[in-house]
Length: 519
Image (cartoon, rainbow, N blue to C red; front, side, top):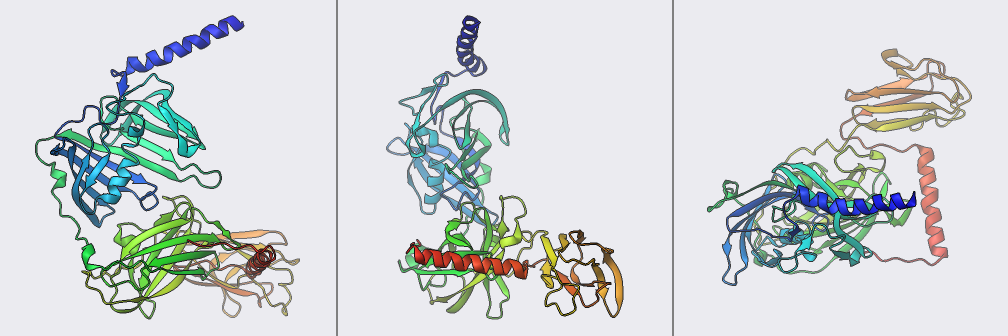
């Protein structure tokens, strides 16, 4: 029996490489193989070091060779709906990695190097690799994992078409895959992840080929006007930093922040660093944070949203640490910046709003010489404020008219479509009936009589304020306000627990003489 198993095993080893070669014509491949003048490519791309894997489109056309024999690329970047960057980038012939680029292209060139041509660290024109090889090399930064063909061939469909590919990748924490079509100079698709040991695993880089071709003149999609960029020479270099740490107004989490320069100039850039921390332990970071940076006037009225200016409805911090650069459009004086957290959860779906909240940071803006584009005043987006799930408790003793709390919380705010659940923790039976004791039920919702340990649930879709009471014990009253911009309120019991946990954490930290430094 063992003899036959051994024969089968060695047969598989022989068949897999043959299978790969039978599907694909090329035996070996390197990044840039077959690249020629006139080739153009359009990619949808994100890379973790560029704004925490903020997605953008990167298009490039090989317009010729430089005087040194390198490839000269014309580059177009579309980020969000409001930003277009055009420029040039020079890449090598042995490995098509950036060796030079024009102003404004640098951050995108870095993302391109760390994603689309990342495999050039293993296979180049001078060292092409065999698709039948078990490994092309190791990644020292992630524990020496072997990178190479996985033994899989896949037919993948991307926006540019359908390709027969060899899957190149590795596994550590997650399956990391790069789909290589041997007849293409660059991979057609990739999805790789950051190596983390706990929590949500963020994407390291991800891309997909949108279009490719060859033309002797610039492709039509280059016929767009670039977004004006503030000239750097108009903004003085200032490395001063202002740091702070505040809890959100809801106490859902703590935000440690810094911005530079300390006194930014109108028309120039301000750089933000954020660390979103757990409210009960500032040494632990929140993950998958949906947030935005607002500017409001002296009366708190909305003026601008940084996410909107990027063509997005929110910003996303997958690992709880963020770096953002934005233009200061406010005039001389005090500007009111608001860090608003919509909630937590995977990007692309409505967040859990349990930890949502805001904090305001006042910044002294100096008169600058930079060119200011006045902000377009828009109402704040409401998409990230999704339906909530709120629990209201009827505590023990609620049937007693002398009790201090009948519904906890008594008054709360929710977004449309939210689910509200009342829990009877009392020893008596109660009702949850919309209306007031003086005017009676209004017919919007009614639980009927439900006993100890039971629950009543309803969904409220229409904007407005809903009063309710208990028909058995009419002194028990409460209200719910349905508002698209609502932030949930914590029950008193939860707030007490949070305060006690934070206090205990501080006492323990002091007792152990624990210190930590931010940024």
